[in-house]
Length: 624
Image (cartoon, rainbow, N blue to C red; front, side, top):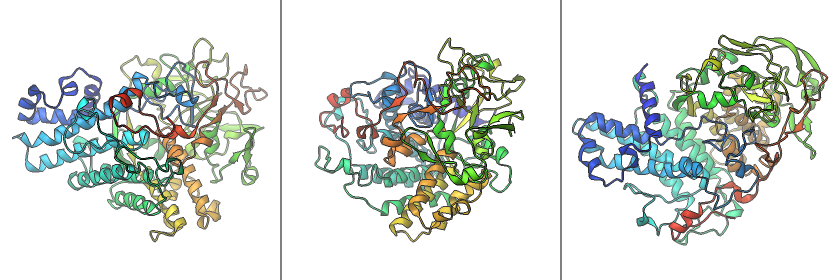
């Protein structure tokens, strides 16, 4: 086990131990300031603690993470989990679920405080060189920026506390209000630049997982992309909304130059020349794409952390496998529809008012059908059987992402010939919530060599979870450039955007976008739409879709209405069964309705009533 694994396991364990003296101390406690920074080892332990506030986002079931179950790519069957309040529109200022408050609000402010305290005191360690002090400060600066960004992506602009370590729960700050969005973005962007200037270009193989120059620049890229999108760029809903200081909390007019800044930020990552699209030119899409998610480290990862695979796999492995397998995380029909055919054609272009698909004539001509069954050999599982034609002839990323009823399961020595996702089948016994309501399961991070049946509660193999990877950077660039071309700013061309997105499609074994849809070379609105679709496909279940629909003001359409899947209430999945038809899912967790509600106020979360009461001047988000 190299030190990369050791440091991340240490960081994770520290992050979960809230009683540790480092984590629960106040910045001015003498016991900390007297001795922590005397030795290199304890100073490094403190730096590890600054990493410890990164939230574990590997759980798609809604225990620690709203981003997957509240996106349109997923429906979770497990009831009585607070993310339901997002999906049915009943979230309130006073809801304040303690787990969400802890994981996604309070801990980030604590991480910000710890980073600032470390930066203020690390120079006191006599065992560090000046260069090490500079590099370690840069790591903490990056992490502090990441924690601020993690708050901003959910709540919008927040108070910027500056360089001093401030306890956000203290009554000493009770009179502050939020900085404006542009002030937050400018400050964080500068922090990323400062961190990047002093961070190592690459960490040694001993310390993979620590921040690098690329990580700071990748954070800036995502920050500026979000800032250029319509939620934060002249959104008319937020017109006239001012903070306590009398400043417009959000930009009042659209600024096309923000797309230029977003494109340039992505270019800065690209210009490092360090990162790759794994297997881009190998012609082995299955091997290459799976390698990105199942190898401990690779050259596509920019910043990642290692966690146990338990959270992901226990929730996505079908119950019929045996052992600890809950299988309650369902891929929606909408995500199934998003994947292209092997010839690059997107089969579904939209939906009628009754929810039925609008099928592209090109797809019909290519053999796409939602009524027939044919003999099909699964390219990963190797089984040959009669299969619903909807799933035949799809691009490789589809087979690496979606598992459907009737397939076999391979988990090391544990092989199950037939996984049945219908009611009464081996993975929907009806005795619990451990089944998929959509008739699909995610397959993206599943290892066919790992036997989850033999795993207990602690001995699950680790998974390296990407927080930033190069494919996202290229998609960031492509989207920003397409908007630049549309607005006539920045001097970019449509081909610049196409070249970036086609690198990802090439790795996936899919033809270049313009070879399938020549019109994208001149229609920038269509090009943007297809780039967002490529994000939906390439980044599925990586916690991007939740933010992509919101920051692009698409959620009132994409995240509202009925959720569709296959008819899991059918009693079998034979070729003549009613199972194989698009159906509104029976529920969206527990006994909750499957129709989702999304209104304008839900684009940003409200500040909790306890915060509004505690901070005298805090400006609440619109609509709350």
